Amino acid sequence: MKYFLTLLTASTLSVQADDYVNFLRQVQNDASQTTHEVSGLANKGSRAAMAGVTTSSVFELWAVNTTTAEEHLLDVKTVSSYHPEAELSITSADPYTLIPRTRADQPFIVTYTIKGLLDDPDAPDAAKSVVLDQVIQQEGSGASSNVQLTLDENETKAFIYPAMSGIDTSSYKGSQSFTLYAHPDQHFETATELATQDVIIFPVVSGSMTGVENGETYASAPTIGINITNLYPRSDAFVRVTSASSGETKIVENSVTENPHEDVWDFTKTLSGAAFIANEDGDYTIELCSNSPFGIEVLQSANFTIKTTLEINGSLNSSE
Amino acid sequence: MSTRLRAFLLVAFSLSFCPFLMAEGDNKPLIVKPPKRTLIGNSTILASGGKWTLVPKGAIIQLPDSYKNKVVTKPKGTLVKWSQFLASNGSWIHKFPVQMQQAQGKTLISQEVIQRFAKMNKVVIATCADGPISVNPKALLPPAEPKTQKAP
Image (cartoon, rainbow over all chains, first blue to last red):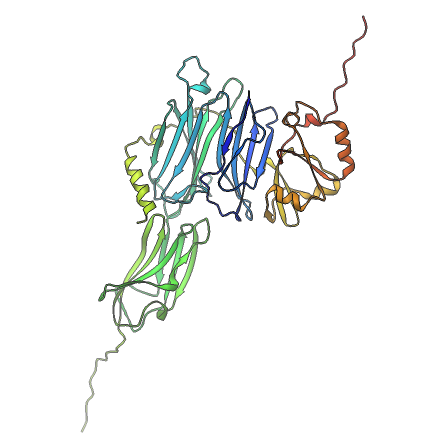
């Protein structure tokens, strides 16, 4: 059987074109796994299958970083005359769509659609059910776990995965891979991949300030040191100060620092006293914050007082 | 709280009564999974002038000794798409369009053509619809000698 298809290549991609080259690989399910490639695909679009499909083909959509050569498998679709159709997607609060990603303390949702399963007891296994495979991989440790589940309904369904338990969310970094497989039939030893999607899990941001102590009084605005660990990709860290008397909150202008990377990022910064607050007497609250897709979070705070007039306790006596 | 975060939490809450997959599954494998996919691992890397690109393994059907240094094992420099790399390196790359039947080794590539490649002193890369394609080595073999039968 030979037919042509139009493949939606990257409808959900939002990649900076200069950073990645997209590749579409078509692997024919023949003896030599004949592989055809198209590179430099636009971030959105569709195209006809390059050489048609003989029996079955697997289409792989990849993005490769132009400088680091890091490769990301964005999507896999199997087109054949006998396998069911399957789609799989992962969403989180992070709108970044090149690769779904989230944080170790946040949930994500896995949605799948299965079509074309047969309710015929005489049908081959490959046509009666599929297997949803989940691989949990912790970066650096080499530790991984694998869960598989049989699905035998033609349906669209979503599962919410809550934040992982039993881990140190401030240091855990890893990924989870979800794949829908068709059972192998009589011609194959291994299962056939129908659809796959990964989600990257980053550790939770933490931060601290030096130079300001809770409850202390200063004669002038102190110099503050900022120390941020694991700032979420493309997120901001900033310092804000609230005056107790006026209730006014100001974001310290030169304190706003964006993580320019697609990975978590550590940095330190110093804010001189005059730079972040007027030297007015009063009580203040200073907060070190993170602004990410998961909202604004206070990483550390301190209350302090500025008192510029010097009080001297003492007396002057005359000996006359 | 951002609009995106609100929308996500709303969806997440509405799904909270769905069974959790991790609770349903067990550790007994139901299938034998194929090997993990890799793009670069299944490719040949061509590099020149600080730029590199990928072609499927098997797409290079002739590699003269003088250009073996253009095939590298680790990418270095900037990745560019195939058409851009070809445009910059046309002096030593020859693009050879093949049919799918040839790529699959079901029909042979003419030996005359293969001998012509040998005289070109260029890296010859098979393409289909302008994209590089792997070629079954069987397609490059000379045709089998016809079997002769002794007269009875």
